[in-house]
Length: 437
Image 1 (cartoon, rainbow, N blue to C red):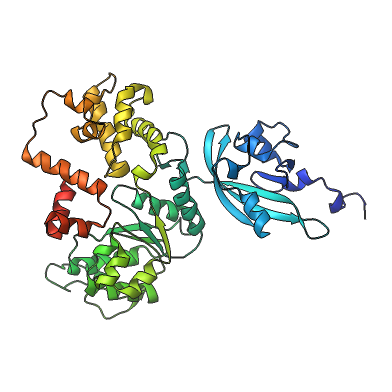
Image 2: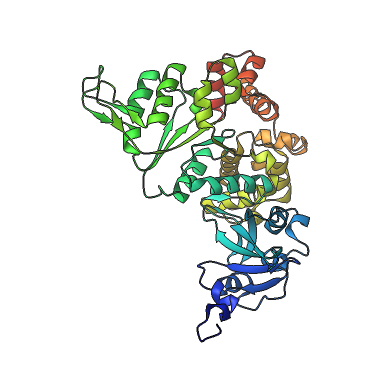
């Protein structure tokens, strides 16, 4: 032992340099004892970090993460003695960035945990700074959603995305696909809302020429098209009961038949579904199959509505401006930003983007003032700005739209129950809310 090239004599930083990304060894007092080149370049412009606290280097905190409102993987690792993971927002030369921290306990000769190895991997599907593409956010609710999506992406487990309209369910499904081992395959979406039973089966499984009136040629279905990729079924709660058993059989066997054919076919796909409905309640009411529900909900991810991630509002406003090529937050009068902050945004991020686009169009090249905002946003701000409008008289149709937006934002039950409270049939309710955008 001790000969030239003895692996026991190789300095720890050189061992860490063999890892492709940032890696650091941290003592039980949170002080860094070794770091590789990638870590130093990312968090300290190449300067030495040994002896500094990890939370000060990567987070610019003055106390450990769990004392500053974030999950601390070291604290978890110390308690359990097992490797742990956490999603953090770190400071980097490019700005704040979402990263996954994987922590491993390192025991001493007696077996007690003496230090921790942290390996850091960037998450490319989201950003914690204004951006004109991808997911944007840094609030705790957003980070919890992102952590779950990152964790499940590398597996083949079916995913069920739950959330209100406008929260970005399809975009998250695309992100999970992009992070998965099927990223080179196709991402194939199907919107299940408002589709007839016959059309649904034809879209999903395809049909043979002459299978029904109008089938003038053979059609390849979406299940066959996404072989090797990901099938995304949006609004899966709207699938009629007679077709739910066929979907269940498809999930269990990955086999199907084109409409008008007796030849079984097979497709290798990963399934991601989304819905704004309460599927558990639908199961109890008998409108959704219990066995299908359990198949789909192996890994549920809830997308938080915008009202639960208010910390992200200014970030999302500036990102919307970038997508429009309209500058930064300095374009908005403080009263305008205050009005936006007071509004519940029942249409979530999609509605926010529409409001920003409309307001910028009305403001032209000038400052975006409260008067450029829609009436319902001004009303939520307390009425002061709304009363400054030339006229508060609106048509009955507009009054109905405002009331529906208010009801959607404040009602705690699902939309089927809200329709009953409003005295509307489900069909009429969904038509009216669809017209709201």
